Length: 583
Image (tube, rainbow, N blue to C red; front, side, top):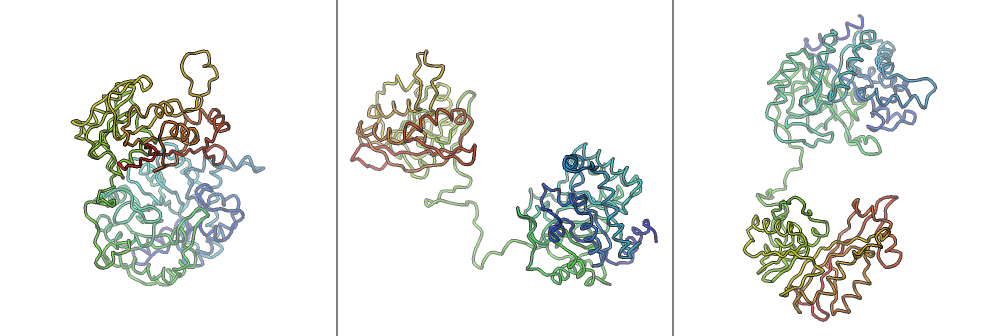
């Protein structure tokens, strides 16, 4: 028999109702074999590097699969689509340049040698692996170059594997390139009966109906020779092949994973031995599998057990129900209906009931400080029956929550008229416009005509470098405390004697000055909540001045590594000294 006869051998087996035995994984076996300094990851191109670093090991793995009974040997080229870009990096580290097309040729020659060494000529075929969708024109151009390689070093078939998304891309165009050369093409998807799967079995997206089945018809129509599913957990296999059989007469196959990928490499599933894998493969055969093997984590031992177990077994038509891979509910337990994740008051927290907010042009979106205060207002139902003031209202997220909590009336205060208008509009959206009024004024010049029971304030706080600004007449906020200090000094003008103010302060301003200032004006503060917040670009731009303030005071923030800076946002509850009335 010649090389061309190898594929005919496979076709004859299917025609005579014999199961074709595929090989198992290459990359995870490279890890198991400890090939050189090989580290399994997508960053090392899922084993492709071994073609130039450890070709003898790759060939030896092919031979192990052949000795185990595999009749299809897959090339070590899963990541070939990206090879033109990353193999150029090898040239820097080796004396002789490495061309990715030479590695593609080598990937075919290695299993050919393994077939000869095991005397399996004509009874084992070489499948050239191409992993993933053909997503770009660059990928399609790579396919065209592979076609040139195959004119002189052809595989017995091309395997497009681990396809997932059924979108408009170039995959069908790529398939046609090889079909026009007369090379058979197989395709395999990481999909189950329920839809697209992740490598660990998680379902992606919603129900798709029979979209996958109709695609199977398309592949059959354009000339694809086999359709399979691969690189998914065993628990996602059952039920898929009988469903596909309703749509296509193509030979169907399966080669799933054993174990899972972690950052340190592939974690093999030691709890499932080769005999168990073979027994499971018998179920797939009963469901109509005509090609069976393994993907990541499946090695020669499993393939040997499968080959022995499936010898002489007929292809079945059993339609097993689709298994639910989730743990069943305990007896007497029912899934909640309607509301999920409620708080102690029975309020649903999913989705979180933030006020309905739109943001007008030029108005600031809520800050992290505003969210911190909002959470406390929501959790503690602050404002019920009270007269409330929101200083620096922005789009009104705090003012509206106070009204939703049952406030008697709420005044939204901001220096920006557009923000006050935006708040009043959002109040209407939330059905609280009848208890909302607004004031547009500068806090520094504001002369209140009334006092409030509850005040909330998330004020701008940023230490400012005075360099280049000393000749001007604007007050420079060296310590970042100008607004906060003004608020504290004038708090008695806004707040009733038995009232409570809620003020957000960042850690870069220091606690001592705040405590001193509050005490001098007859107030005390208690931390009722806090949150960690990573610096945004504005804070990063002012790191120098922040460092200066921290050097001169008890202000602080955390630094992680070289460039990660994190502040603490404190929510202060401020009341008159010896007056701890709860709101």
